[in-house]
Length: 145
Image (cartoon, rainbow, N blue to C red; front, side, top):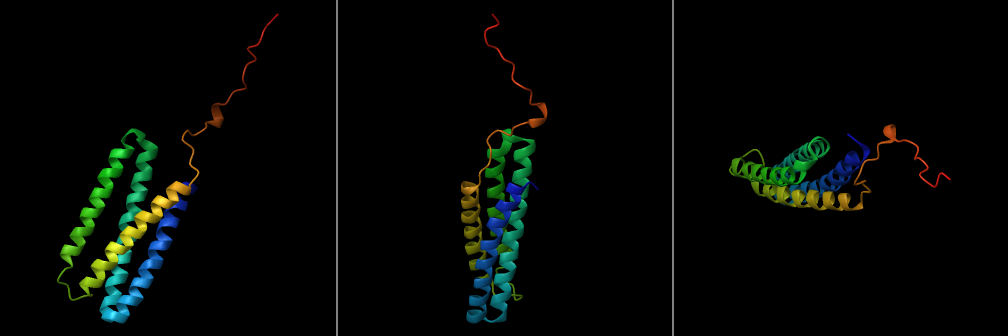
């Protein structure tokens, strides 16, 4: 993974993990151990889904740049739908507190999206990748008199 991509991943994952840790503590205080477990599971799901999505999107941008925008829209739609499916599947679970899970899932998803947008805006990414291997010395096309 190129350094810009790794930097963007790190700048999105760290705030998400931090908010997830805060949510786990708050959920642990409010709902006990099951609340903390629900918050931790939700944080891990968000980091896994969004991190995988960022990786797929970056690979698409490198190999098929003309599909980048469509792939991004499709990917984010699929991620949100999968997160809704997770909430629906674990709605009545007794493994952890489903309310803590759902709330943490929404909050950490919003934090990830905000942090990723900020990271992209702050990144200094070239629009055109210079190809130094084919670089030739410019010819002098001045007057030959």
